[in-house]
Length: 633
Image (cartoon, rainbow, N blue to C red):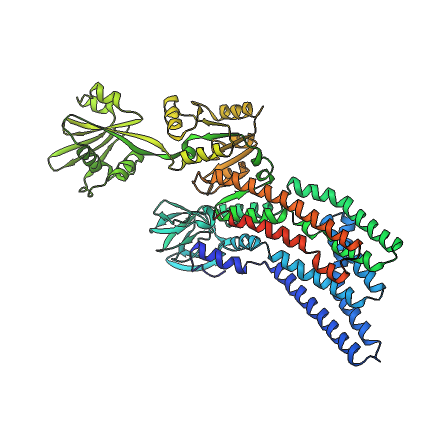
C-alpha cells in the first residue's frame, strides 16, 4: 500500500468510495459482463425477429444463450441453497422455477429479462446501503503494509509483517503508522480518528504509544515496535468488524424460520393458480413477485448501517447483544477511575497561609514541578497560567517531595512528615481544609500553602448520567476500590445516586452478579481491572479500549476513545436500530403479500412483477439508510 498522504478522515472518505474487496470487484465485473452478453443476445434476437422473420432458428438460439448466461449463476445458488438448506438463497430458488417455466412455455425473452432485471436490482440493493459496508471495507484497507526500518543508520523499506518487536522504524509526516509501538524520538500529532472517532489529533512525544491504522501529521517520528503486525490493536479491531458484519439478531433468525413456511406457501399458491385457473403466466408472476429480497435485508441492512455509524464514532460492536440486551438495559454500573473520572490527578484546591496569595503558592510550586515528570508535578504545570519560571536544579527526596535552590532561597514541595522533620509545622486549620492528595509548599522555613489534588470527573460525565435517565435507566451504581469519601464526592459531582467503595475486582464481580438477579445490567469500565465485571454483566462496555487487547476481548462493546458520551449514544443507536428492523419486517412482508395478491388476480404481469417485486427491498434499504443520519443528529 502507498503511504497515506491524507488525514485519517480524508483517507477514510476516499476509501469509502473505492473500498471494494478484490472478490467483490471480480463479482461485479462478472455480473456486468453477463448482463452485457444477455442484452446483446436480446437485441440481436429482436433484430432477427423483426427484419429476418424467415430465419426462425437464430432468435431462439440467441435467447437460449442469454438464458444460460444469466440463469446458470441463479441455478447454482438455488441448488446450493436447497442442499445446504440455506434460506438466504430463497430468491434464487423461486426465480429459477420462474425462468425455467418461462423458457419451457416459449416466453424466451422473459426467461432472459427476468434474471437480468433481478441481477441489476440485486446490484443496486448491495450498493444502496448507502456506503455502509464500503466505509467498513475502507477502514480495513487503512493498515499500512510497508514500513521504513532504521538499521545501522540506514532507511530500509520493508514489509510491515516482517517487523520484529524491539526494532526501530521511521514514520514520516503524512504516513500511516504500520504497527503498535512507542515513540523513542520526535514530537508530532497523530490522527486517531479511524480508531477512536475523535476529530482532534493527539500530541505524541517520547514515551507516547502509537497505534497501527493512525496517521502521523506533522513531523518525523522514530518508533520502537511493541507488537507484531498480526497482533496490533488495529488487527484485532478488523477481526471483530468482520465478525460483526455477520451478526445474527433475533429478527433475522425469525425470518429464517418464516422462510421455511413462506417458500412452500408460494409454490403451492403458484401451482394452484396454474392448475385451477389454467394460467401459467399468473403462476410465474406469483413466483417472481414473491422473491424475498426485502425479507433478506430486514436485519442485515440496518445492522450494516448501524455498524458503519458506530465505527465512525469509535464504537466497536462485537455481537448481537448490541440489539438484544442493550435495548433492555435498566441498570448501569460504572467504574470510577478512568470511566467517570479522567484517571489522572488535577489541582482542585489551594489553601494559602495568612498573607500569601494563590499565585505565590503556585509560582513557588512551579519552580519545582517544572523540572519533574511526577503526576502531581504535571498537574501543577497544567494549572499554572503565568510565565514559565527559570529552571532550577531540582532534587527529588524519595518518598518525601522535591527541593530546589533558586538564588538565595530554598523551595520545597512535599508531604507533611518531611516538612515536620525539617521543623516546619502545618496548622490544624490548613490540614483540615485540604481534601484528597495534599502537597505543601515552602520557601526557606516559611510555609506558603497547601495544594490539593484529586481525580476529577470527566466533563461529559454529568450530562451522560442525565441522558441515561432520559433513556429509562432506573438505577445507576458506581463501584470503586477507592475510599468511601472519594466515591461520595465523585458521585455527588456526576449525579450517580449510588456507590460502593473499597471493592476488590472479585467484589465488583459479586456486586454485578447480585444486581443481575432482577435487573438487566450494563457495566462500563476500563477493561483491565474490570474484566471480570464486564464479562459477568448482561452487556459489558470497555472504556478507552484503544491499545488494550484485554479491554477489547472482555467486553461486548468497546468505546475506543475516552468519550463517555458514547455510552448513551450506543444505547440510543441500538434502540433506533431495533425500531428500524421491526419497521422493515412490517414493510417487507406487507409489500410481498400485496404483490402476491395482485399477481394472483392478474393485475401484475410477469415482466412488471420482475421490476415491482424489488419495491419491498428498496423500501427496506431506504428505511434502513435513515440510521446513517443518526450520527449527525
